Image 1 (cartoon, rainbow, N blue to C red):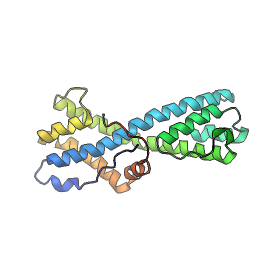
Image 2: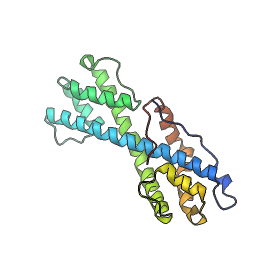
Image 3: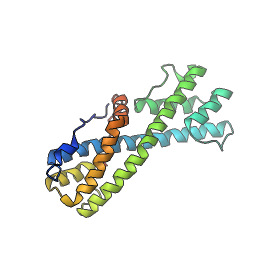
Image 4: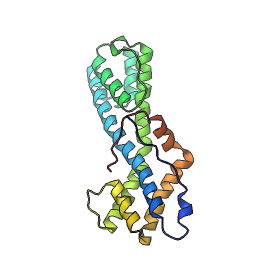
Length: 210
């Protein structure tokens, strides 16, 4: 399964008339959808991994440890991973579903290096999630204002929001769309979003609902 990689477009060139064209608004919506969908999926799987880390921490009597892969897997490296097969298997499965690397060997046959690299892969998922938190919070704020201004239903999908804007462009909302575009263009310049989506392109399909 895979996540769609949407085409980057030169948004600014379409705003000379003061209003975004319907096609540009739809393209902006597609790129916002890629960010929101990836965030939702990573958040869900991050929480699932945290539950497994908590079980590991309890089993090695380190309940107060910070529940991040870098910390918990360091403890496993120092004490060994014996008796943790079930938890490591769940973490490996989650990472595989998200398109991240996992050892090819069966968990029962993991060597110390396998555990180390599994921990690094899990930490990468956590870092990718952290990179999306602030951009997505800003998107939610902007979209919340847009839906309230246009009196859209709370259950309106992300695609529906931009279809509504495309059907009846509103100059009064151009500032909100500009802010969304600025965030997307910043992502384009740093290329972090597209590297993330490209790397996860062989992962599972993600819902386009916001």
